[in-house]
Structure formats: structure tokens, C-alpha cells
Length: 166
Image (cartoon, rainbow, N blue to C red; front, side, top):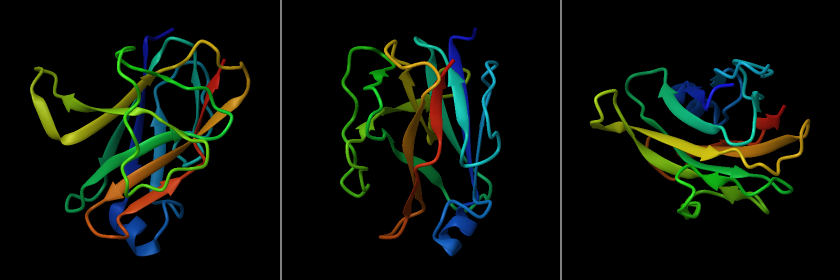
């Protein structure tokens, strides 16, 4: 089993801002888990994970003019508290502009670096370690909040993706 699972968050920012939703084909989630994830390419991705794996989310915008970044990842009520990737720092607080779900637990964002170890300021990767106390076979839903461009209506979220311990 791999030590790291990557989830690519592909966003049609222009479509999402126009429609005011991440549905309607405006969001596609894909992972590289070899353990049998479900609903690849949809906002309903259920990523198959094992305890101790690092899960990493990377936002990609499909149009070149509208930047997209992950504002927050919060596990919804009943989900376990995930360990930060470095296992030392507590999860980062939710930005005030994000609307947290009741009982949500944020994961932490880290600056991304390119393959040569240089900081890439155009990309913010979020990651965390899958906790060992996750119940097998139970989907742990999370709220994925995305910031698209600037302005008061620039943050959209979706509550349908999940992690599933196999």
C-alpha cells in the first residue's frame, strides 16, 4: 500500500462562479488510491485509505485566468480528528470567511514545493494523516471549501466527498 494518496481537485472556476455551485460539472475529484475508491471524477469521490497514510489535496483550475485555492477541509460531525501531516502541529483554524460545518474539524494546508524543493506560490496543497481509529467501512464525509478569485461570493463548498477506511 502506498504511503501517500493524492487527490486532485479540478475546478472550472468560471462555471462555478457563474452557476454559484460546484455541481453541474464544475468540480471533479480524482485520486490515485489503489484500494478501490468510488465515484472518480465526480464531486462525490470516496477515497479508499488506510490508517497512517498521508492524504494530499491539490487544487487545479481548468481556466488560466481564475485562480483556485483550497480555503478549508473540515470533517463533518462524527468524523475522527485527523492528525496533521507533521504529527506535531494542531490543525489550522478555519478562516473567518469560510462557513464551518457544525462539528467540523479542519485539516491543515501547507505551501507546495516543486520537484526541486523550491516554493511554488501558485499552489497550496492540503494534507493530513489518516487516523488509526477510523471505523472500517464507514465513509467520513468532509466539507471542501474552495476560494475562486476574490470577492464576497468567492468561497464555495461541497459536503459530498469522503474518506473510507478499507
